Image (cartoon, rainbow, N blue to C red):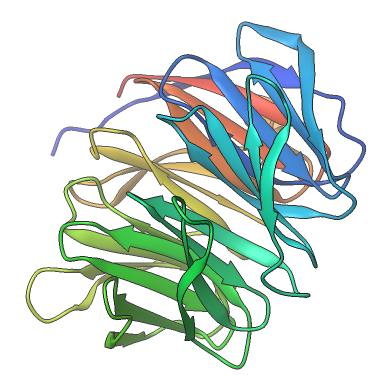
Length: 305
């Protein structure tokens, strides 16, 4: 395959938070995104106006996870020790909340009426958006559930936990359908490819694993992708490329066709983050947003894709 040369430019930096950032979400591709972290502030940003952050909500404790409700223009915030909060973005007001656990909420995903919530005490709760009640819950592990991914084509949700295991469950009845063993440490990141063929997982063991979801699920690739923990994995909408980020302070750009590394974005070469990069978002064709322990978000354009 022809060698692909990418050019990365730093588009903007977004500052104002007072502590590390652990969560990042965006709505469609309009350039609006939301950040949250240890200071409890949820802030709205416009990629075109990096100096004009707008506080949407403030919660007392750390926010590790958020989930966009795109059609409703609403946001679900996972607050450390206090469950989930449902926020209307237009008014900035809390619609309702649900105290699920005294532990951290590390992951939130939405499919149709269901909101999947992974917690620090090893549970996944499935909350109905319509009724705002827990319709089901699954004890995944004695350790934390750190990541979630949803496969709508097979009606399975996947949970990655601190016992180094990934488990898949039927969405309707919550029966366990598969256990994936391969990582040697906590599974911090999970995502299903846009064509639903692959499950990608990243771990504290610094390995990126690619699981083929067709037929008998097995590891198709095991890549030593970073030096330290892989915190997030995000695909471009068309699935042709994806990005990973790590505690090693770098962002890496990959090609899905052959799982080849195309580019490393770091402090030395691109004025990248100086501390752990914790979450990513891919906006449009070639813009990637990142958030870090350094209290800031950055936007990058990647040309040559």
